[in-house]
Image (tube, rainbow, N blue to C red; front, side, top):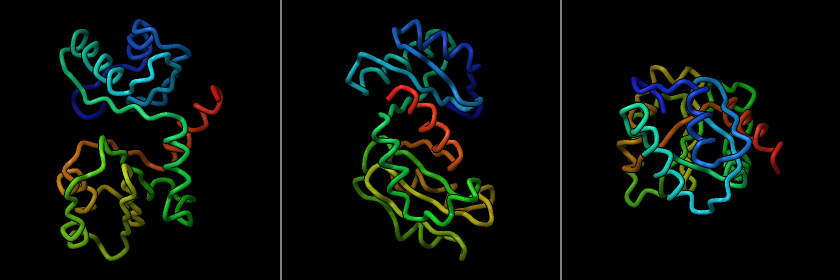
Amino acid sequence: MGGNNIIPMRELVVLLKNLGLQDVKTYIQSGNAVFRSKEKNAGKLSDQISAEIKKSRGFEPKVLILTFNEMEKAAGSNPFPEAEYNYKSLHAFFLAAPPANPDLKRLESLRAGSERFELKGNVFYLHTPDGIGRSKLAANVEKCLGVSMTGRNWRTVQKIIEMAKEYS
């Protein structure tokens, strides 16, 4: 949940608790939340959260829910572990689904010389040593993969896992 449609994190916590989620915590003004839920169907819960935000804020974001195990697996599958020290240069894009026809050739053609990327299932890893802000590759990932996604820098990935560990 980023861009122009922002929801204050305090409001998000209240909204999630009103949906019956427990132990809700958020991380910075980024839309990241960690919580416990009895609902096992992530798609159903995503739809419920999105609908509640539309009702209360007037916009309907795409909500992607990952389990603790999925987050840990994504972090453990990082193909660029040597880049983890520079959390601003390493990113994980979490995809709503595995892409059916990813245009990896197009992404390769957009890649700056220092950039590296790898697609592993529902996660697209991107290392941008010169920064993500000017990266043509980063700007075109979603279009080239053809699925909705949300990207997080490595610090955020690690912080979410750290927060979720308190519940495991």
